[in-house]
Amino acid sequence: MKQLRVVIADDDGVTLMVLKKILTVMGHSVVGEAGDGEQAVALANDLHPDLCILDIRMPKMEGIEAAKHIQAHRPTPVIIVSAHTETGLGSEAAAAGAHAYLVKPFAENQLKPAIELALTTFEKSQELTEKLQQANEALESRKVVERAKGILMRQTGLDEEAAYLRLQKTARNENRKLIEVARAIILAEQMRRDSTTPEPPPPRGYTRPSR
Image 1 (cartoon, rainbow, N blue to C red):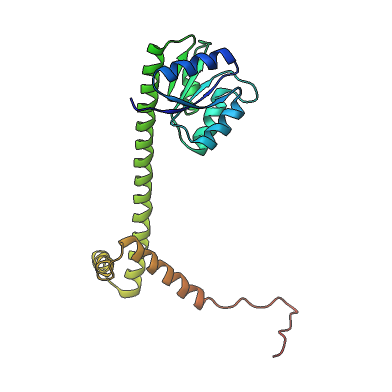
Image 2 (cartoon, rainbow, N blue to C red):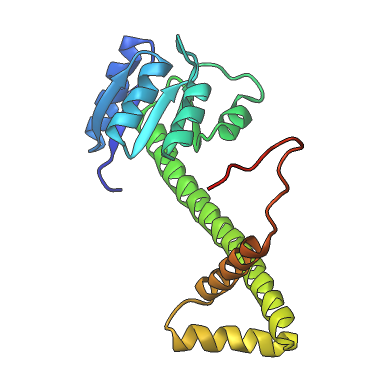
């Protein structure tokens, strides 16, 4: 495992000291220590750590809420640590963006697999997010191309296949992406419509000033 830059947060100073010692022995670097959730979020935003380890119960902002803020600002692997074992806490932590859950007290042989799990889960979630984003972008691009194709069909009388082939040919000839050509056609059509839209009549009783 590579050396990680870690932000740790717990309102118990002893727990912070023990956690820092374990992480240091493991070869990691603790770059920030917080005693409450708000400070943990601020440190994560400022320091951009490789991992955040947050206690679930902290003043000002609890660990689960802090995890939400951290993921919203800059997605980061997060481990939630708790002395509580209530049913549902693990699921709640996962829903907030935590990637592993650890129950106190713990030792190095428990923290190490939790860190590995957090890093692996985070990587998979990032891959899934990227795939979803790519799929959404592809869908939006297809909608734009379809709209441009429809404009060409109306303007030229071409059938659907011929209009699409013309889009492709234009893109090749101009060394541009198909989506760029499609957007240009849509923009040109919009400008044409705007230029031919009649000026609205003046309000009743309005007298146009003479030049």
